[in-house]
Image 1 (cartoon, rainbow, N blue to C red):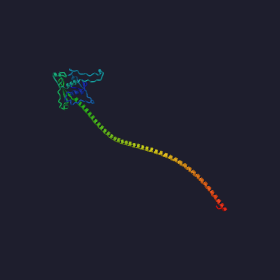
Image 2 (spheres, one colour):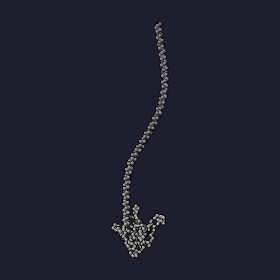
Image 3 (tube, one colour):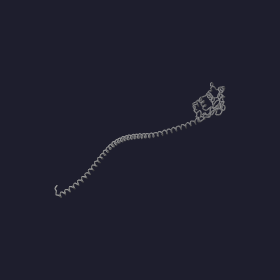
Image 4 (cartoon, rainbow, N blue to C red):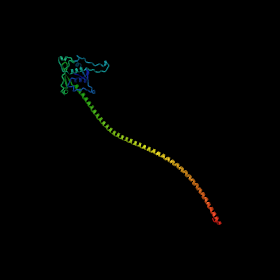
Length: 291
């Protein structure tokens, strides 16, 4: 019996089925990549109970826990790796007849699978359907719907990743343009920073020169203050000398005034003497007295 899509039997994910099939089919293992994107979930595959009847004699099929009895969410439990491999072999085994069909499936008695030639690259295109044998000898034509669905899913995933790659390339170009723009801006800022550094250096030089000039002016002011003090001392001494000279001049002026007064008195006395001499001369002439 072949795997069918439905809601009955033991639930197996398509990923696990592909892994099981790729472990024994050399022609399809290279055509079915293992990673399947979670953005496109696949419909789980289910196997009817008749597909598991061949292996029920040698092993037991694990059951799914009931969410009502356990009180927890339903979590599917899968068979072990040997059961997956055996189930895949049973589904893909050729038709057998007689006693070989009644032998249970076990590790000691595996089903012999006729491998498909790998050098036929158009196998899926030329053979959309294939014959799969059952234990009772009947043959069943199985459609290649699973492969078609997987191809569609993988094509959608490739398209998605291609769009993501294009978007990533656009983002990289945008980031590169932004980086170039920032580099140009950094170059402009570097030139501005260089000019500012030159201006700051010039201001520092000018400030140092001004401080030097201020220091020289302070020294000059101190020298001038010293000279002013010396000049003030000289002026004070000159003022003292001037005062003494003024006092002497006042004394001389007062002496001159006294001399002038004495001279005026002497002049008056002389005038009186001359008047007296004229009177006496007149008296002598009058008396004819020679002198």
